[in-house]
Length: 352
Image (cartoon, rainbow, N blue to C red; front, side, top):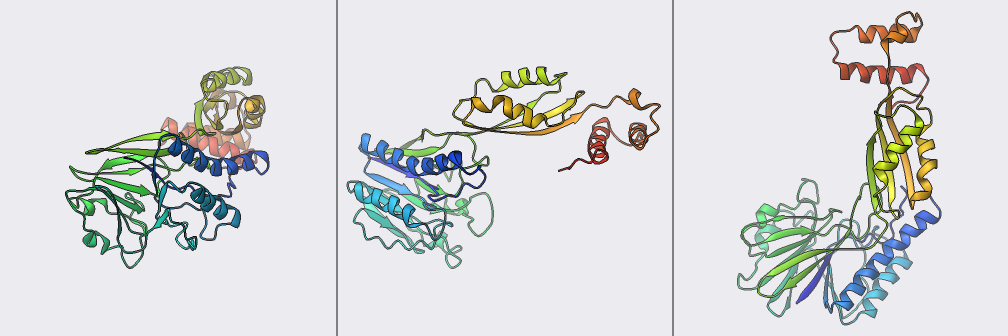
């Protein structure tokens, strides 16, 4: 038997980190289309069970358009059983659709059986967050999958203490909430897996996204399946070796030449240079933006300062530079940082 494990669709995401217009609208459609791509994969590979481990919607009050899209897709795939466990974003979603192939969960443990496989799940709440570990009861002779939505690494309200789930006969803990693929062992028998989100929605969701396919015979084998999309990519480029804007562009071009042209790319320029860096972010962005679906350039560059140029400069700037350079209590790195911030202030520039 094959089962799909996905999470964090976040249908209806506003994508406010992207500029309004064609790019934002394209990514909104991509969020919807990623769900369709996964369903097409299920049909092509005769997969009859899909686990949705929370945050199907981005809001507790999803729009009619997004709700219709999701439930119409389930209705149109009546030969697939969908198990929907709500997450922290869609915990108040009413689930008022009565569909034979849609199975849901509550704040008490619920278990569904598929031949020798059980799929159990519980939705986290203030009332069950401590008791849920002692109330789970799984048959050691079954293949046991458990669905939950929360964070195994941060002790907030959505914290899942996976160590307390050890020795509970869990073979596969199908999690949601973390937006990048992650896996780890629970104990000698079982693992926990985050499939990540289906599609990146900002520069905090970098790289390849997709879902997981479980292939179950006598044991569970699983693999990550990427979804085709415009990926978010972040690239930090040190241009300290450049001596002018022209050579800086050549250096940047060499660093980004292998990045897929369909990417949404963020370039962060770093290093110390001895040429004018005024508006260099805009210049680089203009030069390369036609090469990518979306490009944004940020400059964290610092101008090199030659102390010899200021030995006889009796301005406020010269006095400041000499005092910093002659202060033996600072390391070279500290001097460069102080000078960078001070020069920006003296030039009337904003600092981060």
